[in-house]
Length: 332
Image 1: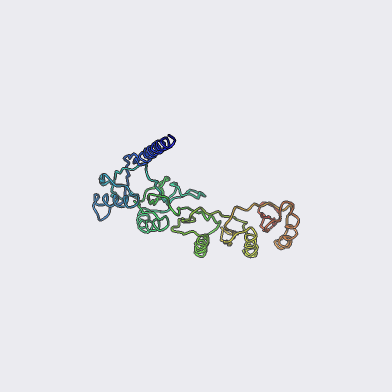
Image 2: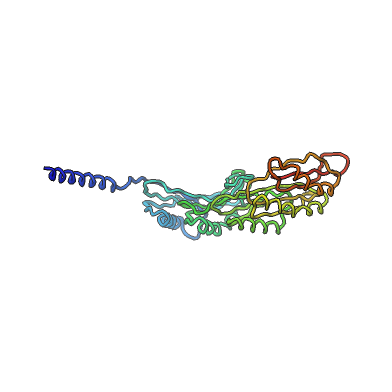
């Protein structure tokens, strides 16, 4: 009797497992989705571009395209010139919409993520000329297939955005850094900034004045400082080594320290990897640059109640009467 019960239990168990397996093998419900893209007119016909878009999409996502159509050619006016664009639409079935990653070459002040406020290109032609190169950069840096690349006016309407779209999770994303140095950026500083960013495992792919667009797994954490301005260039140059040492003590691996022309003065600028530095004034006024510089070691030693400052900088005080006077800032 016990043996018979065991056989019955085993048979019921097998039936339950079979039912569960059958339920688990039910294919997910598919829904119909669409992807619309508008690209510059090419040497191919509009329908041929729609066919190629469908092929790229299937290769990238694995989803079969059920419909691929050219919705027509539309004329946009950019910089006073009519520009024909292809309007393309594909339909496909999938359990869910695949994630779309868009790299946008636009910026707003100090935002690390690109935005559509201001574009990286002054004219539409400048933007269009860079579409091929940025599509290649997108594919290399993100490991995704570029579906479409196009240019459009920024939100401010005074410049152009370049955008590249693809489907999937990117290995690297596009970020933007504003160097925001006070003073005129020389070619030497631009080259130094390229090397600086590359040294932090990032790849610069475009510039827009003081903005640098780069691909990286995460955005850069940077220390950016304008330490002061000087009517005497020698006073700025005399503190370059001290600023470099200050950043090293703060743990920075990459840094740029430079004196740049800022109107009639020289501005002492610094940029390094890491979080922002904090500064506070020493409660003293100095009547010459040399007097301030000679007091740096004493001032640092006297202000270690919280922790020892990384360094000190002497700057001209333009807000006092009675000739040139100087103040000291300590940095932590």
